[in-house]
Image 1 (cartoon, rainbow over the protein chains, first blue to last red):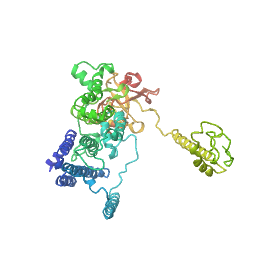
Image 2 (cartoon, rainbow over the protein chains, first blue to last red):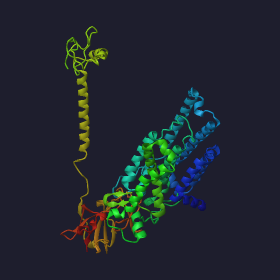
Image 3 (cartoon, rainbow over the protein chains, first blue to last red):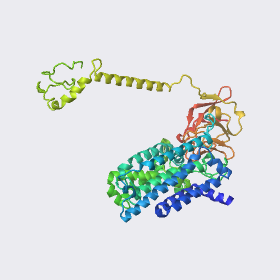
Image 4 (cartoon, protein in one colour):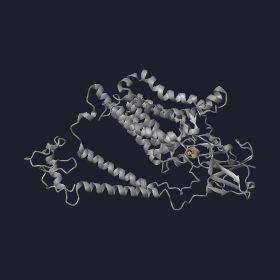
Length: 358
Length: 221
Ligand code: FES
């Protein structure tokens, strides 16, 4: 029993957790024929039911999972998996039809809508079920109210509402103005910009994967691998003092983790060159600034000449620039997280003199 | 714009602003010879009739709109002023920024938490400070420099640890783990005339600006 728990606790290490979600994502896209079979779909759901059901026998696991705050996240795990599986399945089925030269499923009976009794019954059943679930939920689970606010005592751990846990996780790796203002704005602006960047008319009104490979992969990566899995990570794996804890691990306030963080400038000047930190901030952060410019300015140009040449020609300069900028910003999150987990890298450019830390 | 809509239009030059008058088909619309109205004239009669019918003798459409916008602006301004008034409350229940915390010999070396709840400071007595290189006292303000949560003092680990995103600070206040970009701030600390220690949170000293070298940021003893 303990061996199994240790096994799962091992996956709670952020590096392993991230690697796992990433592998799952790649496998899902790559072997989508297998992923979308009913057998795999049911299998995953059954595995989750078993995992959560059996896990509840463990006291530490119960404390986290059965907390009224966290119950929605358990639901989210099931729903997210189901809907990803379902839409991928529809897409794969349609792709097969397209390969055979048939019209996609949504276009077969384009001229009629099945209302009575199909739609109306479905709606009635959904209505009844949702009401029942909501009523039972509100009776059984108590609203988690706490003591009156006290400026001198912050709850430990102090967790944001679940839908903000992804943002809170981002705040661990970036300066507040970046993780709290710039990146969320970019997420919203970026989502709004999608229709203007992606003008591919295919896939409108029907599921398909092969006609929009890049678009769907990027979206699933951003939404499932980054946003949703960060919510799951924040809910189940973050414990007191914002340390990482396995789902079956006791929340020990005194758990000791060596997290001493080092800035890039310190790596270069103290460990690389072996002299002290230069007193002038520009000299000190020179390498970080160069790295940053390389990433934001030079990389898109290099990509446009090389790997992404076809995209560059298809989209044209303005669309390409906006799109690649948003894409690189999105990728900067997992890159910074990995750099923190692997090298304890704190900031690439750290200028506390005027609040500029990246 | 109080023209009676029934006034005959013939012969009067049609100015742009005046209410449009019904024009009988027999009369050419641009009798006055104004070239500007010539282009629009043929389209006017139909719309003009409608406006004329809608106008009530008490309040013209234009007046009514002016009144509506005026009152809307006034109501919005009043609501905004009421909101602004919240910024200046009649009573402020804030703890004083300046306070005495007792005599130096009441403190043993190390981090003292007794004023954290009341005033939001930790008093630290140290045998040797990193900046001042002397023994004495300093007051750390218990606000995380990341996003402002209140860190906890973990005496076993000898560090301050923030529960929000995991920033860690040494007893000196210097940040060493997590996302906090700069050390905790120190408050002004001096001896009062009666020999008690006086802390003044209105004056803050930041390490990254070199202010911890200020004699008032540290009480030698
Ligand atoms: S507020 Fe303290 S770590 Fe974010």
